[in-house]
Image 1 (tube, one colour):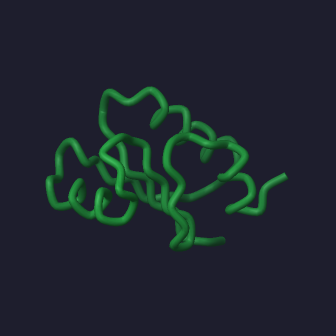
Image 2: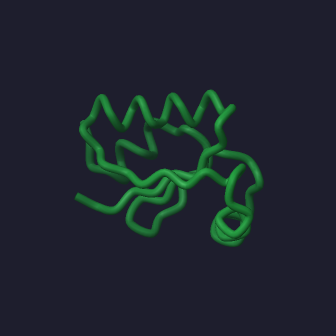
Length: 78
């Protein structure tokens, strides 16, 4: 399966929803807490142009926000 990275903050409800979606669909991911890691926050902004979370990287493709349709397409889920 393709590599998945999610940039999150502790207080983000959409981040929690995205992680629940990954769990429900058996998707392994790496979480990066941008509220605790300034360099990771800068990396996220550079990649996405966004300061809000979640920002999700699926095999190099950036998805801003918890967009189930885009995630299903990128992950090739039904």
